[in-house]
Amino acid sequence: WAADLTDLHLVNTSFELSTPFDPFAQLLAVLPPLSGSLLPAPLAALMTAPASPLRPWYPDNFEIDMDGKSQEWEGVVLLPFLDETVLVNSYRSVTKSDYTTLEQKRNTFGITTQLTFDPTSPPRTVPSSLAVFPSLFHNHTVITPINFEFPVGERHPFSPELHPLSRVGVQSPPGFPTLHVLPFTSELLEAGVNVFGQKSKRESLVLRLLPSPTTTTTDSSAATASLCFVNYPFLLEAIHVSSTPIPSEANMSKMTKDFSLLVSSTLSKCGIDMSHIPAYQRVMIDVRKVKEIRRTPDGAVHKVFADDITQVPGCLVLPYSIDRVDPRFQNTPPIPLSVQLPLHSPVLFTANCLQQTSASTVTTTSIPIGTVGTIMGHSE
Image 1 (cartoon, rainbow, N blue to C red):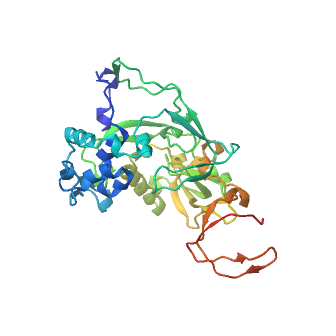
Image 2: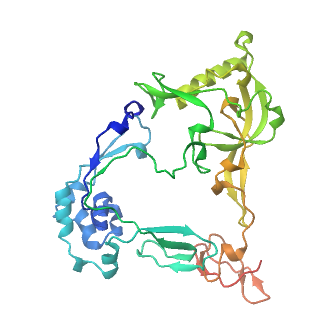
Image 3: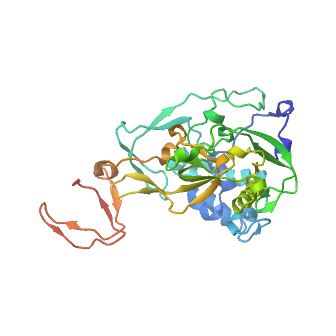
């Protein structure tokens, strides 16, 4: 609730340092019975055994609160609130001797580590600790221990501030949305903003866009066929096809009416007020949005733009900047087979393949879909 998030520095909040649950106790408190395979068998039985004290907290049938929702998966599952005392006593009824050596190791608190991908590090296999998950082959992750110790014996009041090294606003890393790529003011208004499919009955925090020198204007025809960003604040790449100025209200036209409807719907759907945008920035931009990120058989990744034209208001279109592009979705060149499929790595056949029976002979013997094999060599 935006209206309540004020004067946080005046809130007298502190937390007492207590003892956390063991890892298995924490999993027992949050996992459903169908995920019992992630726990040692004696603990999984506590969720389903008829005589278990925990059985009432894992019902087979339960209600789902569908208020304001249309799909079942969107609803709120109404489960009984777990009794901590019953949970702890039941958990402690299983002793360490009931666990395997590996399970005992899993149930301890380890050291804090930092995982970093380093393509230059030697590949290694990380064995899985659970049968339901496969091992990680040809792993290039570097594990670095971090000397982090939580201070003990002190009271630590809540401090409503970000870490000094946090990158926020226009300094946010690429791919992280921020409102501050456009100038705006904010105000609490009863604007009927759509929240979870229904109009808000209370005030909503509405963004009022201000004139911006960086957004597209009526002079943007030079940028036609260039890249831009739409879907503020979740920047999505698009191709700028054309721009059309909106006539003044004195010269009413269908486009003027369409723009007025767009201003109204943007307010109700997104909580963004565009009514104060000056006439010179009232432009409708035709764009072709990125439709998907496609990987080709050779491992290359490229963006596919939609054929359909989408009209967006120019005040919500930003010029393209490589600094704002999410590095996960950039075009990349083909990947050599030796990198895609390293020697001796396991593979799963998802289509019928040719079978090489000798160095010079390739037959069309069918390898059934679903067959598991091993990479023994490459022919680029």
